[in-house]
Image 1 (cartoon, rainbow, N blue to C red):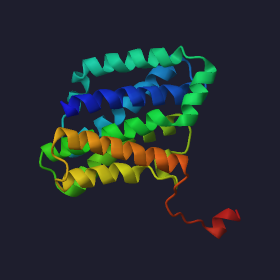
Image 2 (cartoon, rainbow, N blue to C red):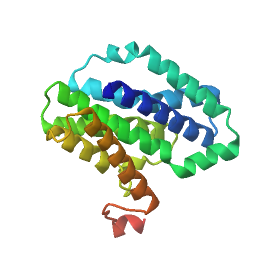
Image 3 (cartoon, rainbow, N blue to C red):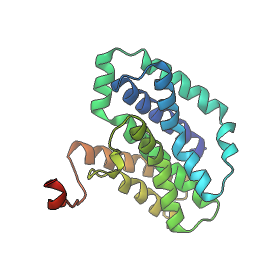
Image 4 (cartoon, rainbow, N blue to C red):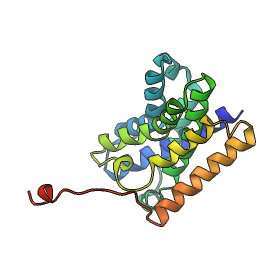
Length: 203
């Protein structure tokens, strides 16, 4: 089932992403597990809370928690050079974003939410864990910088909300498309418009 496959892919990718950031900012092993798990599950938990799904659903994902814990353990044992290289590639964060964006949109669409809610669900599922991860790591959240990130998750929600993706192969194709767009925007430095205040810069 597409839902389950994307859930596993997103959980693994974001567990790796969270663990890498934790190691980079020199958190201990408990901090690494905490940040990895938060990155993997916080987005879905916030989504469920905001669209009326009982928060207890989160604790019924025992298999995913086990997968995440094993993944974080493996990353924690990686040599420092490997961890640094993985962070530079930014690939796992992109995989997590694309898989959870599609999964979050599918979830919202399955309960007949309007298109705005579907786009929001895609965005918060794909990016929510990363936002909380960055805040806990005392970094500026990637989502709110000029780099193109959240837009790709919203695009996935729009496509699913419009009913343009309904078959399994279409969901997988959309996952790959969002992943490619995110990787390309990172590699080529695509940016969204920003504004700066001269008065603030002068202070």
